[in-house]
Amino acid sequence: MSDDPNTGGRGRDVNGRPIEPGRWRRLRDRLSGGGTEAVLEVGEPGLIVVAACDDDAVASSTVLDGADWRPEDEVVVRHLLRLPVARVADAVAMAGLDGYVRYEGADIVDSADTEGRADTEGRADTEGRADTEGRADTEGRADTEGRADTEGRADTDDSADTVTVVLARVQRLDALHLSQERSRMASLGSRHGGIAVGWQVLQRPSPAR
Image (cartoon, rainbow, N blue to C red; front, side, top):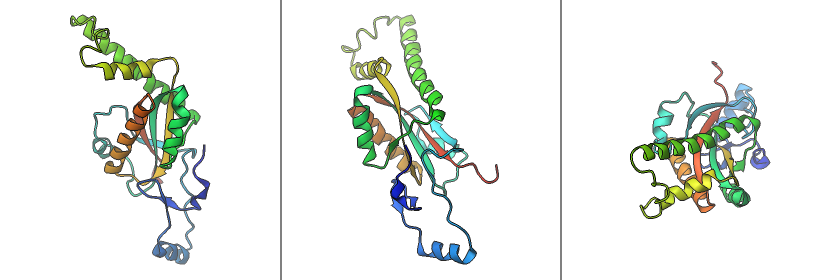
């Protein structure tokens, strides 16, 4: 799915909303003879991942501070959610209210599958270690030990009728707004019986590359 065709060559703000270029910028471009840079699109070929994380405990600022990205330029932000197939359409529609579209490009397939497998295998390894530590029945006693929510989300994530959904949009980015969107996506996933499993930030290659 492509970007909103109604942006009319406009950029995006930190909330993904189209913005009009400033009057000074229009005048500068006209006097310098410079053309308007092509509008960044969610499915644009050649984008590179400049920051990514699949650990919800890691702060957005930590990841971005250590990333090689250009804060002054627009980015494509992708959020990966694991959702029940029957709830995907509703979740995508709700995310669309905030400018997100479902991205199904071939370049995300392996990454999404890896995220899903890593989550599943990570839980399996944790449960395996729990067994060796004398807690063999931890999973079976999850409800009575106060881990019902965690195990419930694991069941949702690992079940055969779930799928990894990638929601993406073009926007300006900073750590604060990325954190807000991560929280929003976690809530969206939870409301639709799933979980958020990671995020990615993509940009065009630097001219210096």
